[in-house]
Length: 509
Image 1 (cartoon, helix red, strand yellow):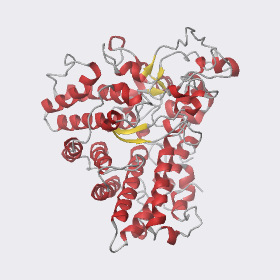
Image 2 (cartoon, one colour):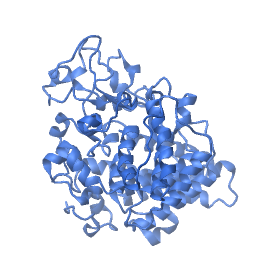
Image 3 (cartoon, helix red, strand yellow):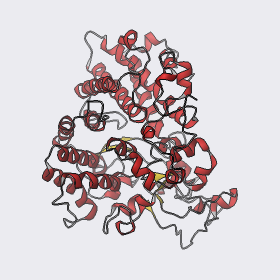
Image 4 (cartoon, rainbow, N blue to C red):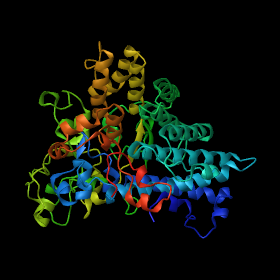
């Protein structure tokens, strides 16, 4: 069963009983580690990028958008973006077991009368995990159930008002900040700083009509991370996406939290295989796939890859451009053909296989492997220090402190340009609001924030309709698409969520 009701009643998949698991700190530790893995796995393979597509930043390649109407609907916003959409259902379904198990752990740990330091830390971790996944759920579906086992009679599994959900997430994050350590020897595990950064995101990204958005509180949370002096910008933007640098001091100084992967089967993420070009797959040897080959799942929109002079975002001299996007597909002196590679083998070719592609997930460590980029396993950043600086700057602008806002943006831009000549200066508050969205795309493209950024700033429909070719062609994107439909399976199986509770604008099917 897919519903969150079902997950509430499902015991942990272990030889121990639920009472045993949630009463022993020894048994709770591996459960929490398992929840980190489940959360990480929401970023694996093609499904890990579904929420990044359908924006003015990224879209599906031609073959991808042609093959599967359920997946195509993520860009087209057409008649297949409905409650029975299998791709949307899968993303909803995989998150609720994390929330449910974290809630059970929290309930058990809160009942310990004299918790040990380890139990307090586990309580912080479980609280962070529930908050992080709840935050994602609210961003993509709006109002959601509150899973609190001590108040299940009060809440049931019905959708709760957004303000109440945000307050619940806030409490989880405040508890996480209280109990999480400042550092972790295991990079899979959360620190208080990632909880603090997410708290700032919660205040900044809260629905404008909920009454919860608070630029001052968001600013305070981000400033706490900044003033901790534990983080800084990596000296070079390329460091962040070089697998040889991941785990180094310079990388760790900027990446506040990242999902950890390796190139080993079962621990890899397959992300580059989905990002790469099918035209370059077997250019030199049919048994060896080039590391930047793949399936064209997610590609930059022209707005995201073009220069400012050509109607895009990139300014001359910005080093982030060529680290984020692949423009050159020449391999050892050979230029691929549009209908080459996988396209030649399968007969699938859409004509955009040599258009600019996403580069951030390329994993050169797989060069020469038989399966090449299928085994890609670079870490995937969740929140970086640069993001915190840009969010703090945005809050300062909204609070009327425009000079301070520009100063913090310029910290990020100086790293990108290597000089002070591209500093922002003399902007009005409204000019800043427009320009910060482009700056966030330049710095954070394909890292998972664009959909949320467009929704919270009120530009989701107009920017996507103008800049995403599939949404533009269908012409059906509408304001109700700022959230996805509640899956039909949830409505059928959860007695607390009925057709009347569906997000407005979606049919009951």
